[in-house]
Figure 1 (cartoon, helix red, strand yellow):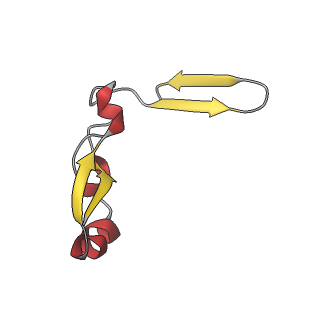
Figure 2: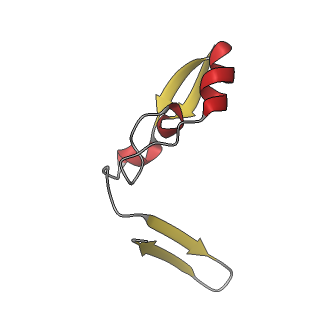
Length: 68
């Protein structure tokens, strides 16, 4: 059975900083039961590496902040 998983969780270097966040549980445990279909929704519109982007929202305002 196929399971869609974010590419960075599978160890593919596609995060904003050019890294990944490989998840041992997903790879080692779920990998026993599923065939992974990797995808990265951010790669559709953002490049790698890039500045970090934070989205902050509350009932008074919305703010998109670039950089750390």
